[in-house]
Image 1 (cartoon, rainbow over the protein chains, first blue to last red):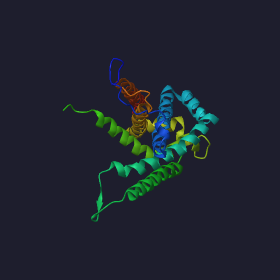
Image 2: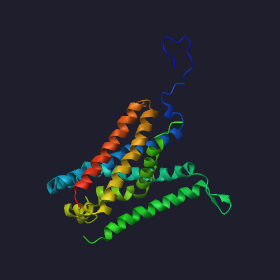
Image 3: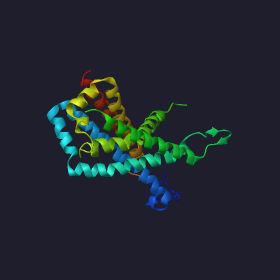
Image 4: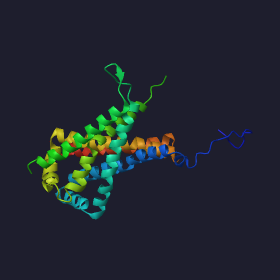
Length: 136
Length: 117
């Protein structure tokens, strides 16, 4: 490290504003930033679980909170953010997997990404359809 | 060589990332838009429905896995973000971040177990 009593003054590449230097960095940051909203959503659910634990009145207040314009606006933002997370998750998935061979040739990255996105569409739709179909 | 504890956090990150990629949109739509706007039956999230749901093991498991894995996934990325902007990259930030995730994990487990069976 370059400290005050160190005679050397080694060059330290400035990192300020690094994320503006390349559009790839910006996409990386957008991908990482989804985590803040994913955490927020998990905390909303955890809060609901706590209100459920407190009893019927407390839980009703949580449900009413979900109906507030603020909550609806937040969830309207959360929905595309989760969709972007899904997309970017499967976009990077082939890069994190060991190479997969299929009939003697390496499986292309785009194939893995597309398969992941299709899987996400199927599971998300299935959840909504099952819940719509439940007798209530 | 000393064994690293990193794989634990990366596994939780991966599991949470995959689960949220596969189910996140549907969950946000149902709990945050569909039911509150009455596009879906409000009965889905009625007090008695939810209470009955988490009294059974499958329901407990679903709620636990969603909340906890989403949080562990997000924690690792938030720590990476803090590191990338040079805001907090030391061991202390990791202890606080992972500590909070662990605390939420324990709270979730407690709330689900105390709901009875």
